[in-house]
Length: 116
Length: 115
Image (cartoon, rainbow over all chains, first blue to last red; front, side):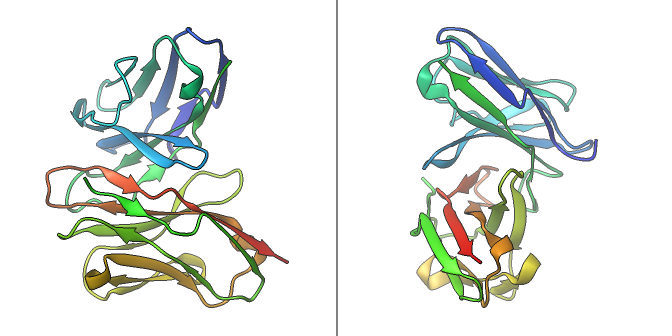
């Protein structure tokens, strides 16, 4: 596609429910990133994919968070048993090459999650 | 661990004023440096980047940034801001030779330009 696509754009859920957030990167981009944007916290790194593997999962806040990527393309971020502190905007970005020569990250519009 | 500090969280300027947003990073080795901008209601987009060479880099919309290795800084500047520059600005760093591909972002600076 023309850009990074994320869905849903807005999600309101009740505490304790599971949610899935989807990211469709730019075609051909091998690297895919998930970030969380909270007010006053900037962009918090969650996880990075190179192809279908995740060399760096260090940013996932707890074992309630997981992510996968299939076919080197679409990625899903799953949050189980959501808590109110999970409320944030979840951003996905993709890049043509992950590594020393990589340049720009292309961001999606984000998925705004509100946990009641 | 690598970290990025942006000293100003909120900045308010009048049109035509000069802008300088501070950014410091913690890693002492070779780094790639970026400034991203998020206009109201829009997604993050690249403003400018530094990989190597001339430490003064120019980006879109008249922005520039200077890499000062001795100060671990990459401050963003614009000589004369416009109302349309109202946005949130994020500094970011990527270590190209550490084996990690993690981009670390600062907490952002919200700029409001008064018409």
